[in-house]
Image (tube, rainbow, N blue to C red):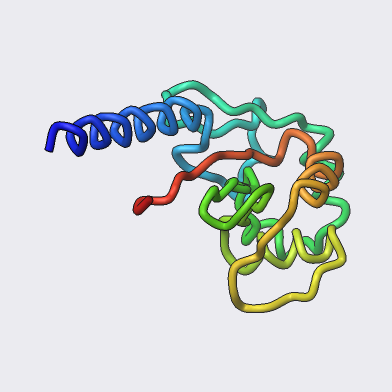
Length: 143
């Protein structure tokens, strides 16, 4: 029985570690249009700090997506490493606009489900979006 309590403590420790690792994740997100209108474009992070976006990155993105999408595309783009899906597998979190953007940037088929990305694709996405991308980590709830 005491072995089980030790394992529970271990899982609790892992949960706390994941929360600390993800403290930089956005607490909320804003549309591209909102961020372009701000003097210092930023959103609040989970830990209360600010996530700042480079104006050049915002303007580059604004030049590549239709103006209609500026009020539908929420930033930062969030990609999460999901450990239960296997080595180097990430999932894109977001709505239709974010999925469409990522699919177009990476040349992927657009479908209705989750978009799974692999490490090289995340690297490519980071090189294209720069300050507009945030990467997090998620551990499975059940071992």
